[in-house]
Length: 468
Ligand code: UGA
Image 1 (cartoon, helix red, strand yellow):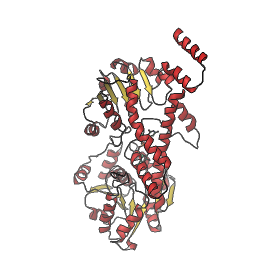
Image 2: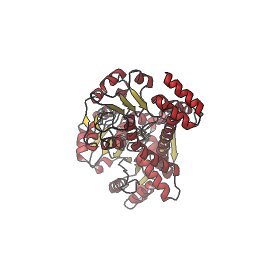
Image 3: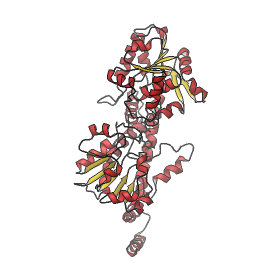
Image 4: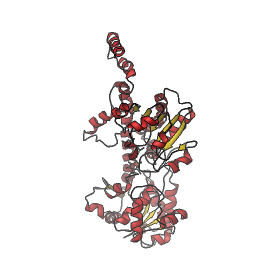
């Protein structure tokens, strides 16, 4: 079966390569001639583990090809997937659907035989109906159907997510379109992947609901982390304790500097707008957006506090700048909020990221980019870990301590064992760890705040401290 993937961004390229791997004949189309020329030469424009190999292999066996010519690509194709960008619209944060509707018009101009037009881009509920109406103005109604097939892959593990998804969601009102999509996904039926068949609107909304729910889960644990810091609890253990409850689940309970990336920030905002427009406000999602936006900025203050509330003239090593590991994507990365604030407070920055430095250099000026983590640490006063790349997990605590002038390490992803870091002489702080452990001198104040001790007990602790 021949299918067309319109748009060669993350979703389009990964989906196209994976469908080709399933044995489909896939033609990827993009208006960007330079990008298509590079793809034809085997150059992959994004960093995604395993993608280059998949593209190369399927290009060689001719199941995957790239072109700017939509008319030629659509010749004999049974389905065309729209996988163009839906960025946040300037001003109101709603999804900008210009590219989707332009794609619908382009596709309509080339429909010569029955075609299923499938939106894979994340689009607000109602978009499929609009696509249907745009195409319906140019093409007889029995020549096409519209479906929604949202994608749930994560950057950094996109191939695995596509090949072994938790589920596939297909929304359409047409039995004919349903049959074609089922045959496209046949390899996943064979591994018993659950398939949710539903209507267009449901599929569209399910995608936003999934992302908003995950973003809410992260924001929830981030706020619990803040409370842990004030009360003597540890968020790592709280997350484990609640995550083992099957109803809650352990995934996406990792406290950190706030979610970023190309999806959660944009999609929570767009869903919030959809709720407002439909007079059905999503107050939880609105709060998530607000809490997360503020949190990313608060992270800079955390670093400044760890440095004795003064970073003027100090050099800070930055480990990781991308929004998550295994990607070079800088979109809405927490580092974009944190690092300029550190610079405004007078800090000089030495940064290293395994894949994102090229992207980041254009967005983050006046940073010394280093050749590896130890290079960034050399001669710095303090360090902050922003992205949990695997190569940072293996750094030696003693070496970090030896390289840092003031031995201050702020871990915004909780990758290290606090004992290891403190035994090496580092002043180590992480997310959601009781201040009583990270800064023993704060123990008294924190216990006092909780009202757990009376003044006498307070005195006893104070005397004990003096004795030790
Ligand atoms: C997300 C969803 O996970 C995918 O299912 C979805 O298909 C995709 O958006 C999309 O809509 O296209 P992605 O943005 O690639 O995928 O990355 P995630 O792994 O979900 O991470 C998003 C952000 O949440 C990152 O900043 C990450 O650091 C943060 N995060 C994630 C946490 O802070 N804690 C966690 O426990 C998990």
